[in-house]
Image (tube, rainbow, N blue to C red; front, side, top):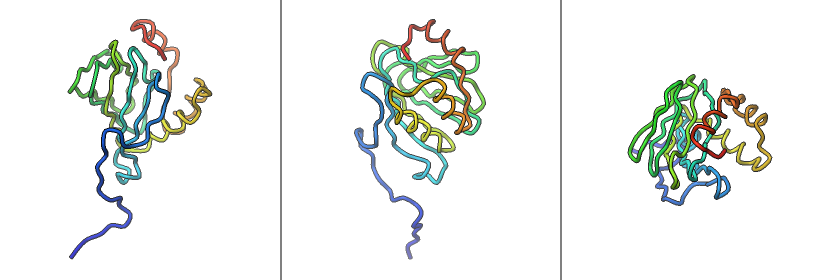
Length: 168
C-alpha cells in the first residue's frame, strides 16, 4: 500500500546552480532553494551570495520568524542585538525573532551563506525587493518589510557601514 499526499511536492535534488538567483552580479544576490510552499510553511532556504565588504541588509528585526545563517564561504559579520560576532566557514549564526540584527561580508573575498528562515514566507519579501532593482529605496524597503512583520532601522545601520567600511 502506498501513501500519497497530492498537496506535497515531490522529492528533488538541487544542484549547485539550481534554483532561481536574483540580484546583479556586483550586489548581494539570493538563490531561492526551498520556499514556504515547498515545506508546508515550516521553513524556507536561500543562499545569500555577498561580494566583499557588502552589507546584506539594513539593521532590522523580524517578529514572525527566526533565521539561521550557515557560513559556506568567506567570513561573515553580524550584529545580534548589541553584540557583534563573526562567523567563519562551518559556523552557524542564529538570529532569533524580535532581535535587532544585520549581517555583512566581513572579508575581501566573496562570502556565501545558507539561510534558513523558520517558519517560511519571508523569502517572498526578498523577491519583492529584487523585482524593484535600482528602484528600491529605503521607504519602499521598510514598507515591504512591514508587510512581512519586519521593522527596519536605517539610522542604526549607518554606524555599522562606517565602522566596517561596507557598501550597501
